[in-house]
Length: 195
View 1: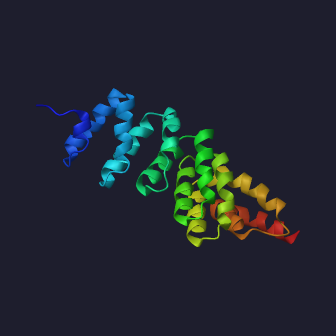
View 2 (view 1 turned 45 degrees about the horizontal axis):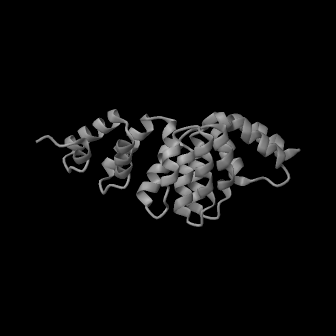
View 3 (view 1 turned 120 degrees about the horizontal axis):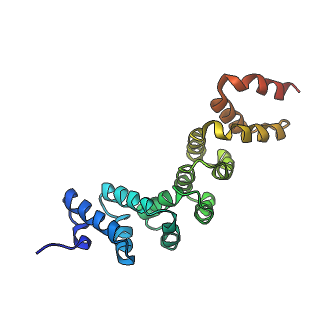
């Protein structure tokens, strides 16, 4: 007797659970989506990652189905849902992730930083800038590293921020500006502080 995809995804055999997952992706029904969601908190990291990739492939329409499932009490599922939402430059998803940037737990803030930095849009960078001054050093470091990946696309924006804060320079912004702009921005930075 052949097993259904819903049964296959619970197999310990990677070949079988992958076949089940692929069948559910093709099925694309509400029941299939629910079954894939459940894999986001599976014990096997590989299943969680593969389920997340499958949900990302379904596109931004998945965001409205994911948001009601966000639950900080289930760290694996929480991480993966934010990760999936972060792949889309979507205002609803961005707003939901943004809520967690103020969470009391630095680990939760870190998850939100990671999610918002997947899509390197200017809107996401501007939301992340304040976290360069987060009270937790690990969140500050993570934010800095993730903003580095935005590269030169945020250089002009950082330039504007620095020019408005000459009197009271924000050192993480200066460091990020120099790290992204390299030697090319040093003369400009010197002029800022000489004037």
